Image (spheres, helix red, strand yellow):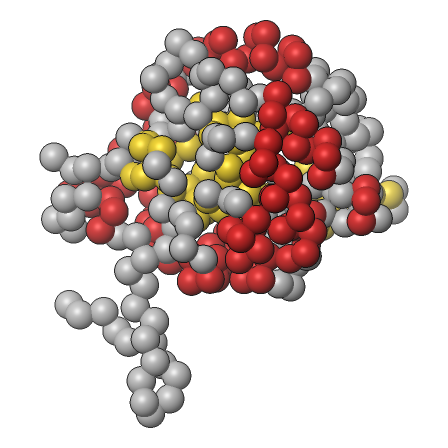
Length: 314
């Protein structure tokens, strides 16, 4: 019997597969048994009502997707009254994703969602910080550290910091998140991008630019997951372009402890179910008793003659 369970900062997940925020909702419970997932991750919420960005909000770009949803939200009150009670019927841990425009607003919302039934809080510090001219908190180590300190003081629950690929300081930001109080890192959010309709010469998104997700993002997210795992001592949760068990295995080998599946669910609502089954079959074929035996097993040692990658033993 293969053991698929993993530990994320003291929170035990029955397997390392969970949805990415914004790609999962209660309606999926009508499609498959969502109890099979390692965790349930909600759509990002804000304190107050939020309409989101102008349409069109989504467009295809090759095999991937651009979105500029703008985090529409019914507010924290509606979330606590309707969404949290729904998930309390399941044993699977509930992870609440939150967003704020300022560090203080973030911290206040963090405190408000620290309620019974919530197992961890994913803090979307990839969102714009109006105190830094709209730049995401997680672009700079200093703003990452500052917001994480305030969030850490606002809750006793595990904090998962969701990082952005829109930075050139990934290891530094990861370390700042840990030093500020993050218990785990979600790596990563979407990559800022755009697309143009050549017939109309207009942007394909109503907000001009949006976030790139899907297969095109995977190599970037995989690189970031590896860097974060090497730079910190807290669990890394890989996110970006994951749609198959092979993708999951790559992230685990690179050092991730778990993964989130996003865009693939839009294409196939039962993608996560398939990934879990395929991951278990892979471990059985490889005669591995636990998925944890894969984590951080990338062979990347340097040889004295020069920087080369050692080949795995047959």
